[in-house]
Length: 61
Image (cartoon, rainbow, N blue to C red; front, side):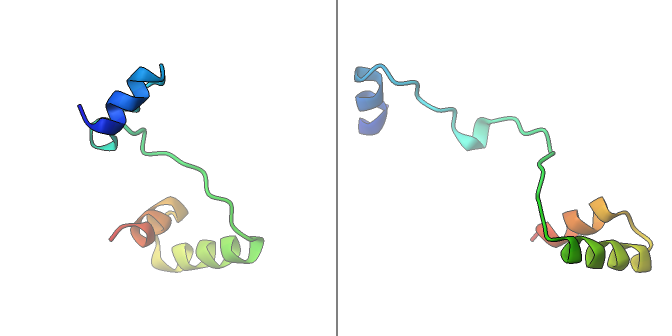
């Protein structure tokens, strides 16, 4: 237990789950300007892929 964990426990605070151990759904919502949405939709259509697949590939590194 780290010093921060000990302090949080002493204060009655919940210790958050480490991100490395957290389960993620794979879904999240991002709001963009309408022009950005339109441009991404056009790019996806031209590439023959879904908007979701295009956005996912752009967010991956």
